Image (cartoon, rainbow, N blue to C red; front, top):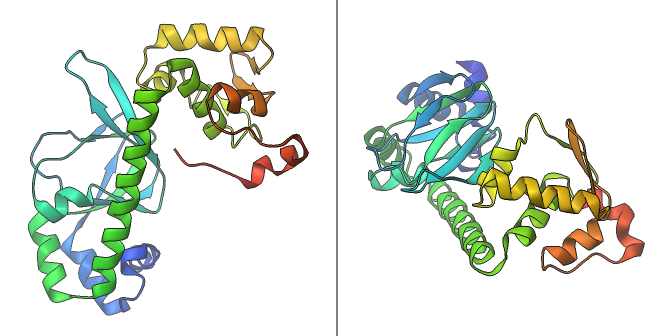
Length: 243
């Protein structure tokens, strides 16, 4: 209990609450565990309430009627997700899948609203609005990418994101072809061909174990974004981009 209270105190929404208030919040929810690849909840099903990811990694996904999967976000601790469903009580807006063994703290729609009445801290409401605003902007940017960038540009941008602009090799065990395709709303066969072409051009070094970005500036051009000046190559590691 004490450890969970300390963990929740790191969540932006709850940072000003007292330990007593945090303990009340903890007891209003439940701790859940999920093994890797387990579905935490599905889109369009009844509200699964708000989750706080305490351990592991989660993919938030949308599924098309043709059976294709798009990963709209990948999250790691400590962060809330599905708070929209906890606020309005409507169906889950996406499917959440445990990318690794996960542990979450979960509170349902009704219990969440009771807590908001008990602890009407305006900071919590403002923080929720900030989170929702940030995620809305992220979705707008993703929609822009899908509507204006071809597959090769979306893949180039994804490789830059995953590698921190070329500073870190991409582990193919954690980012298999199927998952790369799901990030950019494509299919594995197309992504595999694009990776081979980039490898042949010397933009990346692609092996069975990892993908190393060799020319981040050229990939930025392929992604239709401004390339970084050559004299700033050593600063790439200081410019991480979240997915």
